[in-house]
Image (cartoon, rainbow over all chains, first blue to last red; front, side):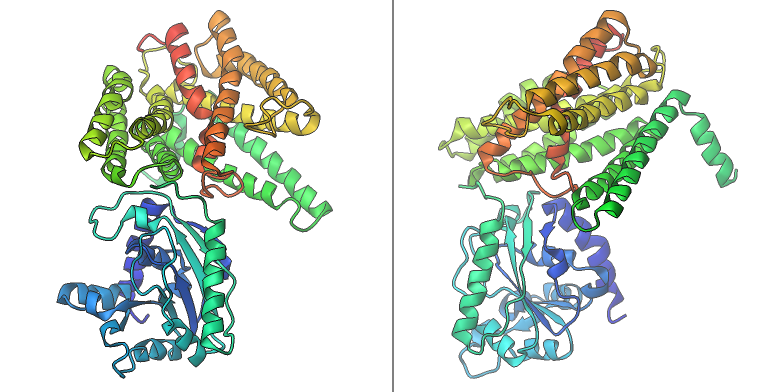
Length: 213
Length: 324
């Protein structure tokens, strides 16, 4: 066991907590990748997204699941940093250094090369939970580097209501998690991003309505 | 004391009629499972997948509820509090709610805890007024303090509807477990709850089966297109007969009281089903979630119970129970 503490916390704490807060109403669970290298691309509106994605993988795969997270946010505090690395198992991305010439995706590529299932939120930050924001192309560069790795789109409906950006106390409300068919690497970044966006929006259209105004 | 004698003593302490009733349900489910297996063998593939899923979920629900009833009122209150929580969470997730109402959502869950607290503390009068009077006034006051007046009345009504159906009404089933030993109960307090669950779910299934077999004339086409007069009347007759003949075995009901329950309870079950369908249609969903494979959400399964539980409780209180 690579990290038994992480495994126990994910199975014995994260799962019941996710079930309590969201009901974890997953459809298409059988489409989740069980071994790496694989990429899971989800929309992002809440920290609950990460909790939910870690909670819905079967026990035999969960040790391999690694969410990509912003180094500037999750590693700035030593306690949260330890928790983020050891328990959440994040792959840190220095998003503030993007465009500076430094290869900010190197840790994610290393995780994929090691056979991990890398979870990315292509919006790059938490949105308002209603609309899919602009997608950043980092996921396309990962897919290009690992063209045989499946890129599984996941739409999470309602996590932004459980714990919106800026709130501290979560309010239990059902979240639907819709797992789509993997999107294949399309040979070029633009075409791939368009396909991924269309796949996410198609899943969103199937999700139960959010009557939240 | 070794394990075998502990288990033997546990079952020996139960009312024999209750154990017989549970054995009957297990036999029924076993028969349904055998039929589903035969059907699948005759026509392999996905044709009967949902039927098998549905039966598998019935086993889980029966195991959880039977276990709670046999363990006593504490376990039953906890299980019903969880059922209410899941139903309320489904309701609040689907109903139109304003972004400012997050504190009201949290308050609704605290109200659920308090209501079940009154059941655990056996404070019947507190329970009776807590949601219909004090929550009815207090939660809108909290929402007024939150300051958003757009859609105020609609949202206050939405919260109240959810709390009364999912918490207050379902809670009556758990409150039956607080009926004292001193009352004449042929199958104990658990027998009262067992019979409520049995006839409510039997009514659901009977209406469905009669509707599938004989259904011609739609009863509420704009709300619930699958409901027919034939299904409703067939279910009414079958469930009424079940209540008339099995009622005296599990409850202290007899004579007039039994007749009223036999006539009214199947109608209440139907009413709960149709009313919740109207809510779902308004919201724009078919099922309230996928929490119970083959059945849909908790609220899909418990919709009739939100109507039958308070009616059954009050008819029992009127005709047969001294405490309430």
